Image (tube, rainbow, N blue to C red; front, side, top):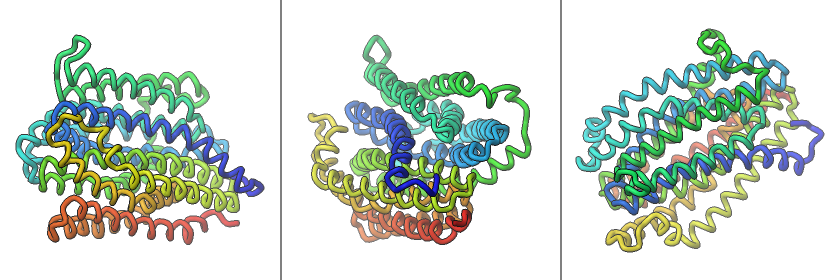
Length: 451
């Protein structure tokens, strides 16, 4: 970011970088949404188990992706400094750590049924969710490598390829879901297992395609040349920056996974409604996440060039754009909740009316947390750009685990307000995080790059 740029120029730069990232995130989300759309038409039990299984796998994935997110500001800063050797070192070791984490994460996914039962889930749902997770485990390491390479390319501002490869993967995943869940196109009817097989197939294929592209499009970095060579210094740098990001992600995703578990205590219909509402909220969150990653790159570049004035202007633009989109989302959620929820349910499903009633209340609460959810993820992106991750991790843990989860239990379970009360706790936790993280960036983060 240059101090000579106007706010309009900063806005354009952020949008040019952020919009393809948003598109790729939405295409990635389309894989999960497609699963839920088709599973909802297959059976309520399959939808509930898929929601539960995805929530648990996402917790592991989002922790492991902390190392991929660490690659983003490190590569952006190294490129601004002209240090291409450092680009190769941190990206390669990011892949190393991701593969190791993915292999470790397979164990709790494969043997998840006892854990789900211990957490109070209904036995029939726990069995189905465990089957789903045992297949998803295969794709954990490839999916984390994809995240590293996407962040590497984003730092190089090569976001168009990320967008199109993810769109193609989402389309093919939809076709595979159609075939494997319902037994169409000559395939066997596999139900929930078919959805998992489709997702894993696309994760592996996407990893191979992006790896080939990186090898050919950026030969100067030689990412895969002597890939087996261990770089202790590069490994340590990525690990030091990445583990707090992973635990920050865990704190936030743990909040949402805890709400899924609480919904499971209420019943399958509440869990199914929660799954639909959380998918809709996740779609809008992907927009904020794309802008957050773009802000990380812009701030990382500014830090590498020691451009303090440009850093501050760009940060203000990122916050303003996020607030504008959040305001639009609030209006849509409040205007057409039943239309949005109905996309995920078969018109002839006898449980449809009950799920819609629950879901409308949840979307009303989702509208409330749009502003604070966007604010907290933008603040995290800005802080990561200046490579400040440890204190934000503490702020996130306090906000989500010591404030958000207890609030969800208090409102939803103890006071008996049901699903709406559980989601009210989400609002409280996200608001706390937004306040703490924004305060951290504007008082401490900007000080790392003086005017």
